[in-house]
Length: 119
Image (tube, rainbow, N blue to C red):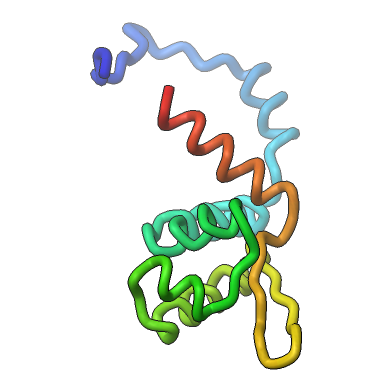
């Protein structure tokens, strides 16, 4: 990694016009909290693993547990969090429940995140 030192201005010079312009365009406070909560979901390695698996294929809890070497209970707990945040959806086929990514946005977020960290 390059220089990680944060550079600061040598003088204090507030650009009021720029501040006002940006202030008018800022999302509402509750939207920013919602966005922060959304990204917090990605802060857990198990949830990220589940999302990466589902990027490849829809899967039932049994298969997810087997693939990731975890209990079905642990997988179910994480799927509940992912579902609450609308990152995954499920469908029932007989006695089996299959999970998949909720939509193309989630696919793009995961793919772009992987691209970014591999640069």
